[in-house]
Image 1 (tube, rainbow, N blue to C red):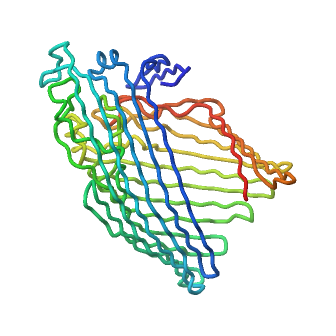
Image 2 (cartoon, one colour):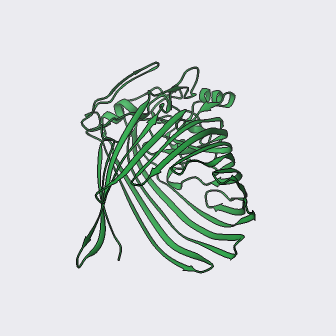
Image 3 (cartoon, rainbow, N blue to C red):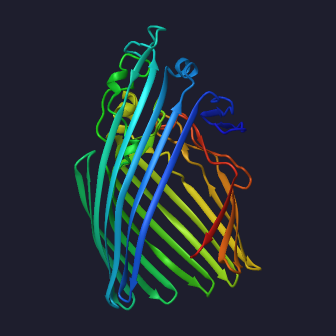
Length: 456
């Protein structure tokens, strides 16, 4: 729900109204804390840096104990605490003009604990309530994971007009599942002319799941209640593994001010990670599709002339998946069978996206305007849970200004002002009926930001 907003959308197969007073008795209070310390050194032949980081997330949900129980069949008081800490180092070494060697290491330790005090009604195997006497169920879970990575790569100028980028990365994950992957990378950049650059490449990727979004295997506690899961099958969430191919025109200059680019890509995915708010769950839960395919193209243009700079991009994309490989208990048996037999769109899929921006420096102040335009994200069911329909097109316009000051005795500093979503266009990004969506969600409304930067 959006405080102070009432929005109506009339679409084929979709009719929803947001009520600004619908959740006055409920409270979701997330808090996020992040810290980072880094050191960097530069020499004639390269540079290196190292940093340590830490992050803590807390989330507390207080339900409407009567309304949630009557309408949803469960009223849950949920608290989640997540910690993530680690270390990362990267270095670059240039032994000669033809080679630039990079290497690095990464370590991340993650842990999450969730407490859930739920009140439910008893129910039969078909989910029908059998009594008005409530039951209290405590469902506390925890998860931890460790992620280790090493990589090395070289940018080799094999010919005056040809650069070859090649490397190897190793990832390992323990805790949730003992798994690892060796990932090669290869890319070619060819300057076919002074004004034109072509590129092509391949990369293998390893994407681990987030511990704070891994569902608990405690659905058995809620059997024969109004909070029972659709099915009783579950498999541990897996890391996603991708083969990524891309090729295109990296840059083609038309004169001295205008540059054009075109890039096409194809991604073959295994164990596709996705997340959703299933049933009465209050926290997003990650799961895997067995297989996925994402492909598209992007056309880009930029223009620079003295104090004026502009850019524009147009992208086409499709993202689809097939089969549910983990987290099956979130789906009904019929939905599991449909997704196994059919390719479905991911709810993050958007067929067309365009962006543009312009900035101009006037009297020492950089003024900017940029916009985002989309054909609408996927939602809904047609013949099955396939996210076949799309929201209507939308746009978002942002304004910004940046000015530098030089104050005697204090030195130089900069002030930035930004207004996001100037016209307060609140458009839907999720709705009940899409795969894994239990509650609707909308883009943020108009927002104001002020920033100050100072070098010491």
